[in-house]
Amino acid sequence: MKRLMIVVLCFAVLPAWAGNDKNIVNAVLKSATVYRSGAELLHTAKASLVQGNNELVLDNISNKVDLNSLQIGSSGTLTILSVEFTTNFLVNDKKSSTVKKLEDSLQQLQGELSRIQVVLKTDKELLDLLKANKDIRGQQNGVTVSELTKMMDYYKAKTLELQNEISLYAEKENRQLELYNKIEQQISEEEKKNARTYGRLQLQVYCPVAGQYDLNVSYVTPNASWAPSYDLRVENIAKPVALSYKAKLVQTTGIDWRQVKLALSTSTPSQHSNAPDIRTWFLSYVNPYSGNNNIMIRGMAAGVQVQPDAHALEEVVVVGYGSAKKVARTQQEDEYQEPIYVVNGSVVSKVNFNKIDQRAIKNLQVIKDAQATAIYGSRASAGAIVATLKEGMDDYVSVKDNELNVVFDIDLPYDVPSNGKEQNVSLKEYKVPAAYRYYSVPNLSKDAYLLGGIIDWAPLNLLPGEANIIFEGTYIGKTMINPGSVLDTLNLTLGRDKRVVVQREKLTDFSSVKFLGASKKQTFTYEVSVRNNKKEKIQMELKDQFPISSNKDIEVELLQQDGASVNNETGILTWKLDLAPGEVKKVRISYSVKYPKEKTINLQ
Image (cartoon, rainbow, N blue to C red; front, top):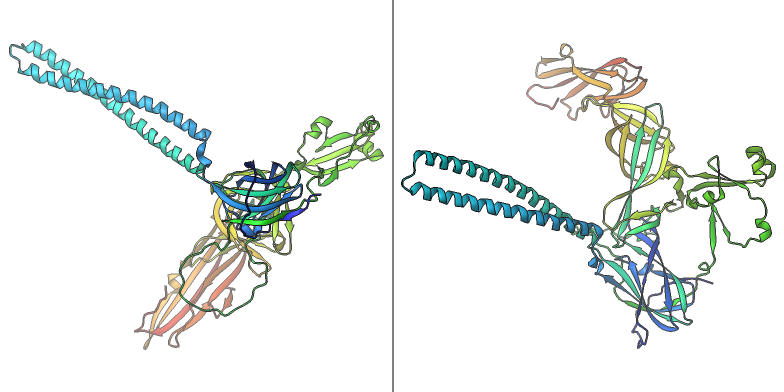
């Protein structure tokens, strides 16, 4: 029976070691649970151990490991005498295929450059020789005019030919040199990608019985994280918001994650599990520095006892959502007529059915007897096995809403390179009913903004993050989702809509300046018009304002608000307008300001 072993790390002086040569084993990464900051990685390995002391090296470990999180499971009773974490800096011994191809291109380019440079050198020497011969000929006596003319024509034609050829090959040389430099830069970038290190665990193991052992190694590393991101798609304001929940995943563990089972958790493994104890808050000057307080493995630990894991040796066959132990079939059972196999409504052969990846099955149903023949006819007299396959990424992600965190469990295996670049992972797709309205503050902006109010948003398990807005098939821009609000409605800004036109105009005929003794009185009147150029009815929330006096010598009076609700403390007016397709509505705001005429105030 295999029991889970927790590595107990007790630093002590090692006894005299009389073990065998190092046994280096590659630890295969199977799954990764990525937190907002950090990740828990699970590796498996197979090791052949001799009876007695063994020195076992587990390769392909993350370049940073949290000491307190290290756990090792074994299929037999082993004793870990010590654990040492080291870093392997020899990752770049082998060139990647990309680098090899680039170097081949560079070598070919070098040959072409050499040929171009030979032609250039030859042409320049010929041109110099031609110039020298021209000078010598010109100094000789007894040359007739006809001979001189022919000689000049020859020099002219040959000089022009050589100069054109030199210019042509010089241009070719520059192009080749530019390409040569680009390839060199690309090689440098590719080498940087591989310029990473991975970790290894050096174990001193006591094995009571020689044999092959299965090992499970799990630990937390700080070099991975994920952040939420969203796509908000609105086909039109009569339909719900299509919300795509995504994750931006980054890892720099030094090992490429290939075909790894992924899970994304909203918790952080480095957070303390104890309830906080409030203490006195002292203010002082601080340096803007943040560091990682997690203790990493840097030394050795002894006295670790590995116990067998009870779940290691029992074979399990996954079928749909359930699991069953593998059992032997009798020859008599095989002679029975087999049921038919149906996938997404179509009958398939047993061979093709068995080729289906179990992770792709959304639902598996066994139909027997009369019910099977009623649906599929006499061919289903022995029953029918009906499978419905998963269609989109949404079917491959299950959400576990725990009390303290949410975990997105992804059935599809993922490849995540250790290059520090963001990789988008699709999590869930939601159709969210929303109450749409347009919003405009024309004294600040002439744009009309579409807002979507989502009422029942808590079950979506949203996190603060950036969202791309796609409205009626057009990318509008970005907005922020902030689910930290205590309000019942989550308001989303879905971008500007140019087909809702808002204009604000000062009416000079209804605006004036008057002097009353020692006072000056100014009246301002504005007209705001809203035009709905859309094909559907819209609701508009329109806002404007009048100033609020902060001085007893300044008097402000609201003269006209055209049915707006007025907040006299803030000076904000709000209109709720319903506009039919093509309809135009106008509202006015008018106010007066009276103040001492020798004073100047900010009225614009």
